[in-house]
Length: 317
Picture 1 (cartoon, rainbow, N blue to C red):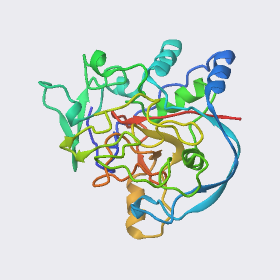
Picture 2: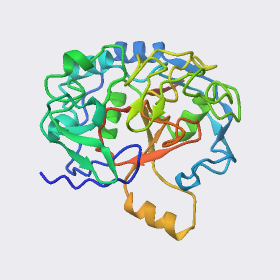
Picture 3: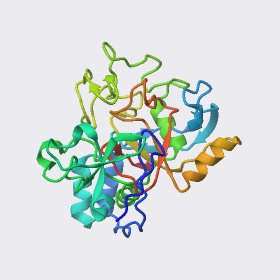
Picture 4: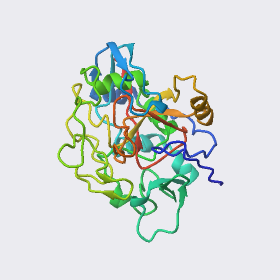
């Protein structure tokens, strides 16, 4: 298999592995679907905000601030965890795309010491192609026991994998408008789920992001070098944990940008078929990837899988 990756985004490298997604699994029994929905958080509908008039990365299409009408829905209080995904795999036999293709992207510091030479992504060499890395063996073959925690968000899941789980659970992936509405937690036009206070490297760590000098030094002042448990840090006003930081979250939407500029059109042409992700991850830092803001966004190919991509599910209320 040829690895024709390209650094389309500094945050989430596109896999470009091709092929077709696995067949959709049969839905979970109705009682289980109802139970999963009942455990989710009720998000009120009404007038909502999306985007910002204070863009930090205009090329990503963060602006302008606009209004949207949202119907009430329910959303997982956390990203889907390893334990939840394991139950799905056990019930359905689902094989993730990372497993089917035989490799996934691992951040360089997570690659086990002594592991054979790995191939990096051009322009973002901190992303390494690791054969045998998947949701069970997060950092590569034989690393499951050391890196896999039942209560952490599942990673190495593609958009296709996430959508399969959501359908099995009786739900779906959120739209960008729903995701932002939920992340704001009733606070309105704020930069973060907790308000306006900026995270820093020393005294204020309300989420799991990078502290230090990316990509070489992470002081882990927030307590975590990689993922944190899915239910950690203070929840937002709607009771949702880790809406920014920890892991990127796939949405239902295609990655598009409202712009007529030639350079943006060229960028989008190279990202045809990409899907939108929100929230940033444990690798984000203001000096490098200031995308742990509510309005921030990025995109990647639907078959992309990494150590910092996860998802959460929504259900109709």
